[in-house]
Image 1 (cartoon, rainbow, N blue to C red):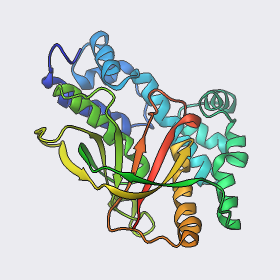
Image 2 (image 1 turned 60 degrees about the vertical axis):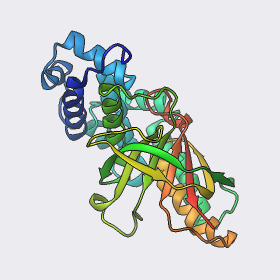
Image 3 (image 1 turned 30 degrees about the vertical axis):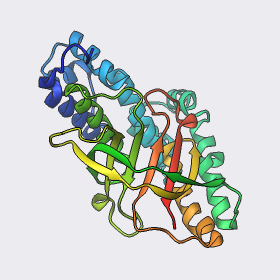
Image 4 (image 1 turned 180 degrees about the horizontal axis):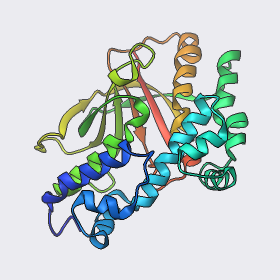
Length: 283
């Protein structure tokens, strides 16, 4: 579809709907209402949205609410029923059924026996074998991306904006590698101040206009931890890497930001099978 026409006039509509969904997850997100925000008929808009982002509007809303629920289960003591209702499920039964189909565990089991619990045990006990960490020499990468400011767990909004911009400007690169670049320590700044970029590898010399930007991802030696599972567990993997592995390995970090490489995405992969390569620049 993007080989036929750039359809650049859809760009603002894509961004407007993406922003609205992320900012109104607690509201009743009727598909016809979202089509009104896009200023297109529901028949055409739904197909355009799915063609660009790889999922329907309803699937996006469901995925984001489940992701938020998983974060709450992993990081808070909020009652499961309260989490279910806040994310659009009136009963524990309906929430448990949908959550288990995506995360492979019931909400209660995810909280009790999920990967985050194992990681917490590993961190507290100083387990050096929780993950395998490999050294890898990466080539410098020229990338184009979209800035994100705020909690790192919300960078998905920037990735959705990125794909919409690439599609509307007819510069989509099939199979291009996805990266997240993270500039700040989440323990040292307030969540709303954290800076990151959602980006994709691109040919050098490609001209872009805001809100797209070009950036160079530094090459060199990296310590790479391959994480398999929901993004809601990544912060604990980082804690283990910095608190347990790095001091024991006696490795010095370089003055470059941490990056993440994403071999798959939430649009085509269930949460328990998501793969994230956490790359820490080292000497």
